[in-house]
Each structure stands twice: as C-alpha cells, then as structure tokens.
Length: 303
Image 1 (tube, rainbow, N blue to C red):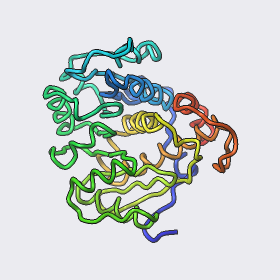
Image 2: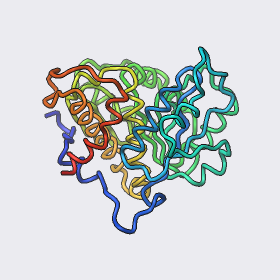
Image 3: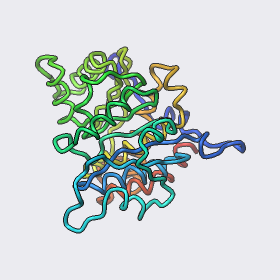
Image 4: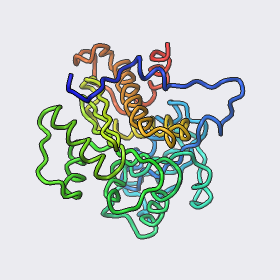
C-alpha cells in the first residue's frame, strides 16, 4: 500500500451509511439541493436525482439553471425529465429561498460552463459562498479557485477534468501515470484549493485539504460508461446532506463520505452487472441501472 494512502472499503463505508430512527422525518434525514442538468443534457439531472433518492435523502429540491436554452430535438427540460421519473422531487425557481432550506447542494452535473449565463454564474457563486456543503461536479468545476468558499466543498473530477483544474491552478507539470503520482497530485490540488478532491477512476482517490487521503477500488470496469459520474454525485450529495453538521466539524468527514459514496456506487454496479469480484465478468450496465441498484447495495453493505 502507498504510504499515507488509507484503503477504504465496505467495512468502513458501513459505518457512515446511516439508517433513520423512529424519530426521523424528511428534514432530519437531509435536504439536498440540485442545480444539475441542462437543455443539452437533461438526463444528468435524472440520474443525480434518482441516485440521491435511492441513497436515502429525506428531501430533494431541484432548481433549474437560469438562462438555459430551450430543449432541442423535442427533449423535455431537465426539470420535466426529473418530474417524470422522480415525482417526489420538489421544484422551485425561488433560488434564495431554496438556499436556506438545503443542507447540501450538488452543482454542475450535465452542465456546460461555456453556455452558462451571468445569472446562473451569480447563483452558483452565491452557493459557493454560503454555509451549505457543496458537491461540485462537471460544469461547476471551472469556478473553483476563483470563487471564495465558505462551507466545505468536495470536487468530483475524472482525470481529464482533474488535469484542467491542475492547469488552471498553475501547479506546474502534472505526473499522473501511477497511483502514487495521482495520490500526490490529488493531495497537492486539495491543499492548493483548500477543498476535498475526489479523483474518479478504477481506484478512486479522495484527498482532504490537510493531506489526509483515502483510496477505494478497484471498481468493476462496467462502471466506465456515460452517466455514472452523475450517479456518484447524487449519491454523495445525499450522504453529505444527512451529515452536514459532522462535515463542518470534522475536516476528514467529507473525504470519508466521498470514499463511502464511491464504494456504494461500485457495489451497486457490481450487483447490477453480476460482476461481484470486479473482474469484468457479468454484463454491461447503464448508469440508470446503477442508480436503481443503490438501495440494494446500501442494504448489503450495511448488513
């Protein structure tokens, strides 16, 4: 094992997959806000919402992008697509009111910063400066490093996005060919940006701002398909929303929840694909297959 890199598996994840007690209600189980999906990628919003509900969110609130284009090719809007698949979701355009009601937010899945308008950028900037914990994915990653942060934030880049963040931070030459190099790079970027970094891959590395780092996997290779990152972001958002106070009190809690979400995500994919040993056995799966299996994976890991 690489020095300083702690293995995180099902046994560790089980401790953070909480179950409701008899006093629980939807607000005590965590309220998650989503600003995800777009006219071009409405499915990302569906996948994130599905994953959040399946991972145990008490309430999911969806706030569409400001200034988004009209849907193309006869597609529904992101909000309409979420409503059609997860009618439990609460929808609103009263952004300021929703900011005060959410324990955590998932931002950026299925969005493109090159088409983001000023109103949406202002809304995201407000969230980054607010008290709620943030999961920053895909189209929100470009704001990191240029926007002041108040609450803890975890970024979920794949390697290509990580390279873009590294370049934007002007940290010099990036070495990322080996697990040790990726570990060191994740720690360096997390320290530089003072955020938690979840670097996705077969072996997912999660680094906290103080250098604490976890690794999980290898994951089933069937996870290497479009949309699974949106599922991971939604699952992580649900876990974070349920433990917002702990995240604020413990500098390592966000990294632990990130690794727990990655373990849960992989376990769901193994179940869905029948690849229990992550060897490539079984059959292909879609991201929605993975999202819909999160509840079973949750139960098995807890059990």
